[in-house]
Image (cartoon, rainbow over all chains, first blue to last red):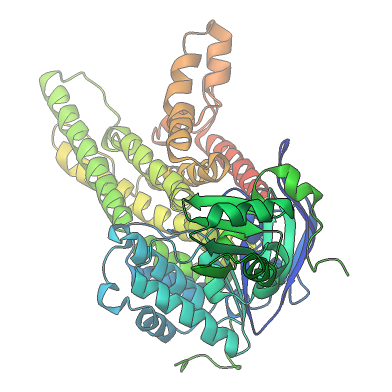
Length: 307
Length: 269
């Protein structure tokens, strides 16, 4: 369980994180979303006791990270794509981390296998590709078989197979009751892995809700309509104050009316339809809309956060 | 899948676990070994060349007087720079590679982390610096023996001069490591170390008479010069006694280490 309470961080006059409040609970994959520079990494570093908050606190099972008795058994973190000395081999890097917490060195072999790095264990990590670096970072996070996993942009640089692997790893760990907190600036990625999302923009909380509700609450239903008599239909829709957007000569996108209403309007006026299809906004679209411009989200109350 | 970890695993970090981790870190980077090798080769090589030059000078001019101890330790200045740079990099290398984040996550108590790093580096530095100092001394005396009345390790103050020089080199390398913690950037910290050690004496030298010597005797560079001269064991107007000077630089180092602890604990890494 991760609890973030009134957490703020400023660098001089620049506010990176502003009064964040949220909890990350066990048994689910919680996505941490926001555009680049939203304060995700800063928040994660404060949770890990690496950066000091300007005010507020971040707690792991009720205590600051610094006071954890068994840090690596409790939290495993991937914070940077490359957080190892380039001259050290993957195995030695892991051995040094394991030794720091009295973890048995046999565990190193296990995480190397788990992350598919066994064959390159004796190579200097400075020569690793971004994907291999990410795997080594994930191996480091898994060393203590922690109950909480904190991953900052883990899919960066991974190939499709690697992305598939990290997704199923996160889901299987969540199913076993672990707490998974994973950041991304890619909404589509989160839609596939996370069941809960915490969205921030410019250091402020925008939403803290389930992925499904997040989309439902923030998407406006649009309907795609294709018709040989498109101009007639457009006139009728405009007369009823629907928002109409012409995408090509015979196709329009309509919002402000339900799909059923549009269908009935067309049949009542003997207009032939070639297509009438509801369009659900993707998470990506919702996200783009939410994080566009500071004015918009200053006015928005955090969804599901207030209670 | 998990076979070696269970609920009975005690994974609480301590100074001993931090020391083990630091030992693995420092010996698993090839550049550490290479740098120490360079220090040994340069230190002994330059010292032996100086001993050869001393021997030649005395052979040509019989009245030429050299101090066989300090002559044989001439290369320690260069050895000092090399191990100083290694000291800086022992910390700044973690910053620039982001390893420090992994280290702090594993050992959240930064005082323990820095203590382990200082102890590990100090042990290596003392061993290698003393090794170089004694190798320089013995090889230098062997080279010079014959035309010069060479020194023996059993003569008064000779052991102290050689061991003290080695210890001083190690001490300043700890100073350099602390500079690395304080400045965080390799280039800046190395420049600061070389500047304080080598450039500052050059800047102080041209000052008007009393100021020049009054200030320069406090500089580590000039303290180092007094250590290998076995002749004077007491203070003079231009320099401190060897032990006084050594303790002075130990005090500088203690202050720097203190600042390093404070900053590492209070700053973000």
